[in-house]
Image (cartoon, rainbow, N blue to C red):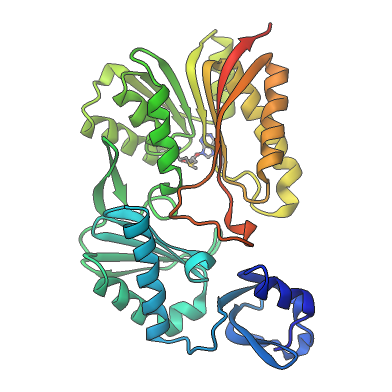
Length: 383
Ligand SMILES: C[S@@+](CC[C@H](N)C(=O)[O-])C[C@H]1O[C@@H](n2cnc3c(N)ncnc32)[C@H](O)[C@@H]1O
C-alpha cells in the first residue's frame, strides 16, 4: 500500500509509530476489514501496520520486513520486559506493554502473578492472542491473565487464561501496599502515577490535612497517610472507595486519620469551601476530560473550574494532574496558572512531571504522552 512522502519521512526519519489514513495514496486499495497491511514508498518496503477501517490512524507494527508471528511477538515482549526489569529496575509490578511504544494494539500490566491485558485490536485477538498469552506465561511467573477488549461504550468481552480463581493481589509502591483487582477500572490500577505518588511523600508532614480529589482506590491518600497526614479522599465510585478503605486498613492507618466521601468532585469541593475548610495539600487527579480533539475546549473549562476550586482549598502544596493527551503540557500549565490567578494564589513550581517510564513516550510519538502532573508550592495567598 503506497504512502505519501510525508508519511514516509515521518516513519523513516522521525520514528513515528502512527500515520493517518489520508497518507495512503490509493484509498480504494484499503481493505474493508481489520488487516495487517504492508506500507511502501516508491514500491519499496517501509513498514507493516495494523489497519482498522473504523480508525483514522494506522498503527505501525514493525519497520523490519519480518513476519508477524510467534517469534515477532516473543522478541518484542522479551525486549519490553528487559527495559522494565533491567533498566528501570521494576520487580514484580509494571506496565509491560504500552501500545505502539512496544506493540501496537496491546496494553499489558503485570501485578505480581496477575496480568491484565487491554486489547484494542480484534485482529490481534483473533489471530495472535493464544500465542501472545503463551509468551507472557513463558517469560514470567504469571498465573492468571485477564484480557479486556473494546473501547468505552462497546460491549466488552473478557477472557481469562490460567488460574480462573485469582484476580486480586497486593502490590508494593515504596512502603505503601495496594490491593489490585484485575477486574477494576482499566487495567486495575493507575501505575502511570506511581513515581508521582512516591514524590508526594517527600512533602508531607505529620498532621497535615490532605485532600485527595478523584482518589480512586486511595493511591495518593495512602502515601500521605503513611507520612502522618489526615486524609480526605473524594471519588464518584463507591466500589473504588471501598477498596480505598481496605487499602488504608492493610497499611495500618487508624480509622480516625481518614475519611472517604462518595460524590462529585466539583460539588464536594464547593461544599468544603462553603464550610470554610482548608487543606495543607490538595491533589487533583481527574479522569481524562478530553477523550477526543473536539472535547478540548469543554475539557479546558472543566480543568479550569476544578483547579480553581482545588486552589481555593489549598494552603501549602497543590498537585494537579491531567491524563487528556489532547491537551498538551503547555496548555494544561496555562490553564492551571489562570485558575491560580483567579483564586489569588501565587505558585512556585516544584516539579512538572509526566507518566512513569514504563509508559514510554518514544521520540517522534507525542501521542503516547498523556499524563501531566504539576507539583506547586503556594507561596502567597491574595484575598
Ligand atoms: C485517574 S483516576 C484517579 C487515580 C488515583 N489518583 C490513583 O492514584 O490511583 C480518576 C478517578 O476519578 C473518578 N471520577 C471521575 N469523575 C469524577 C467526579 N466528577 N468526581 C469525583 N470523582 C470522579 C473516577 O471514579 C476515578 O476513580
